[in-house]
Amino acid sequence: MSAIDTGASGRMATVATLPNEAPWAWLAAGWRDLWTHPGLSIGYGLVFTAASFVILYGLVWSGIAALFLALAGGLLLLGPMLAVGLYEKSRRLAGGEHVSAGSIALVKTRSPVSLAFFGVVLLLAYFFWMRVAYLLFALFFSGTGFPPMSEFVPTLLFTTHGLGLLVVGTGVGAFFAAVVFAISVVSVPMMVSREVDTLTAVVTSIQAVVRNPAPMLLWAVLIAGIMALGVVTFFVGLAVAFPLIGHATWHAYKATVH
Image (cartoon, rainbow, N blue to C red; front, side):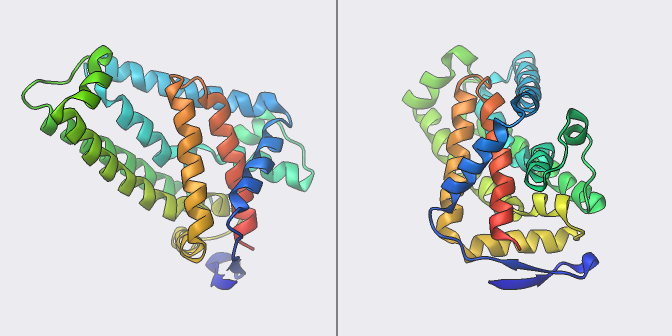
């Protein structure tokens, strides 16, 4: 393990060395939390699903529904902050505390200022990603314009400019996702449960990834895969996928940072 000064609390945080199969245990623990008072978790996921529908409707209304995939990728950037209530539910369950809709909707974090600042950082990253995605679409479809939603998948897979967008967009999106994953994988639940400044939480998160590359890579792949399953069901599956990942992320934090 390696120790990190958490600053405000005066306590040292240590980053553990994890077994490669650790993410499966996090998912199992998250699954148990999901089905303990399931109405709270599923309700939380339904709010996330509804918000995704609203954003998708906005894209359709604006005539840029083809940015659907960019929106889906953007969900991974905002997810760590949007799951704060799920972290709180898992924390309360582990501590034997009462869990209610109010307790997960209005979370009293130990580091509210640090968490708010980090939320702004992730929101800016999301807006930047959407802007980059729009520019990529405009670049590759400059001669034809944005295809309608009904033609988007065939255009993406069976045309030269569509394949170019798929390759470049996937690469750029993966870079954004990797950076956000590294800085947020344990930092947000850490700020929920401890008095810690944003920089220390982010450094701890990065160190957790650097110290445990194999399990963290597996965890990133599992997150992407489970969220993708939620998205391909036109966001309906996110009602389960999102809370599952949120609860499992809390257990990832507890296993990694001591």
